[in-house]
Image 1 (spheres, rainbow, N blue to C red):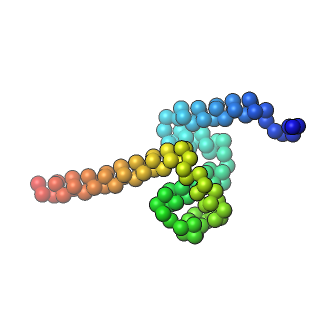
Image 2: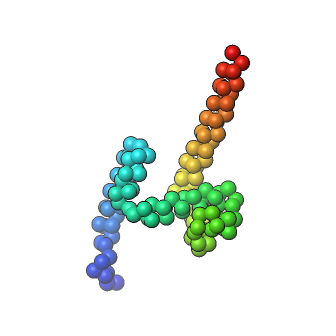
Image 3: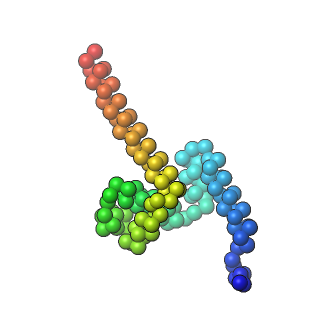
Length: 122
C-alpha cells in the first residue's frame, strides 16, 4: 500500500499524539488546558469537541436526538456518532467526571443553604 506524501508515518503519528496527550495530562489547571487548546486549535475545533462531550452527557441523561440537535445545533448524524461511542472507556471516564462535578455542585449548594439556615438561627 502506497502512502500519500501528506500521510504521516505511523511511528511519527503515534509519537506526536503521545506528546499531545502528555502535555494535556501535565496541565496543572483548567486555565492551563484552555490556554494550550486555544493555542493549538481553532475556536470551532474546541467548540466541536466540547459539543461532542455535551452530546454524551445529554445522551447519558436520556435526552432525545431531536432535543440534542435543537439545543446544541448539531446534526443527528453527529449525535449518532457520539451515541456509538457511549460504551467506550474514554467516554465513560469523561461522563463519570461530569457526574462527579455535578454531584459536588449540588452538595455545595445544599451545604451552603444549610449553613445559611444555621447562621440565621443564631
